[in-house]
Image 1: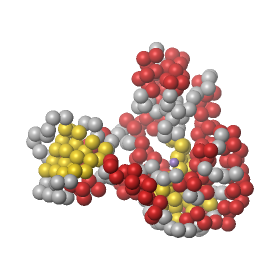
Image 2: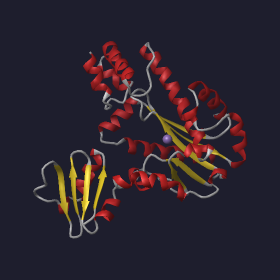
Image 3: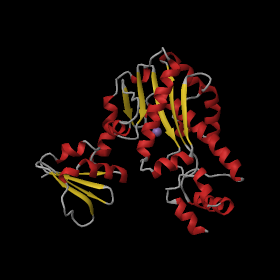
Image 4: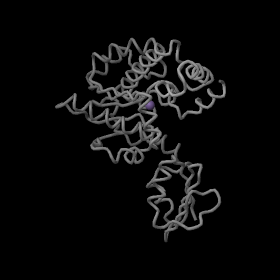
Length: 305
Ligand code: MN
């Protein structure tokens, strides 16, 4: 019998438990959160977030919840195969986010619209994959960009992020909701002009993205394409990425001012030290306004004190 293994967040685990409540087994195996048995498949969920699907329809059942671990990388690599051939020269909305891997600072999400006629101009402005650009260059290019193209910027402050996280929202869900909102805001700004499509710098499989936003009032899904490394595919995503990084840099400058010292990016040892310094200076509660407190850095910082 084929086995399919998924890794899901704790909140998704709870959703699954609820979903399978009619077929739950009374005695789940050692280490399992729950086990369910249906005529053609069985599900066993573990505390680690690993969920095992077995039986004839196990694989189909698993597909409702996400992509199997072993296939994840293969699918991501193949995902650009679903894109229109002429995507680089279409008039597109691109979306990207910044700050999800940084302990300090907000998450910034941007949707930006680039018409095909503007592509040469944007190249002239220096727009390209922002991973190869310094913060200084990002700021320069972004200042030109925001006066040239329509965009929508959403900044999720740390207090709000921590609140959502405490409610059980995964980072994937937070991102999906913000990307969808940014797209809708931008479309409103652009109205009556319509893009030929939307390209999302992929952070989740397509079906997972739509599951995350299923309870939103409005869901934008017309000609929405997903690709990893989308910054290199269309300048709309590269533009979104540059504006998002610009907003993140500005937010970090503001946090540094508030702290009275430079707040570091990333999630390394320097970050632990800065967090410890903040706790000493302002108290632990205040950390919620600076950082994504569920990161391991919080515990590491407390050990330093
Ligand atoms: Mn991205």
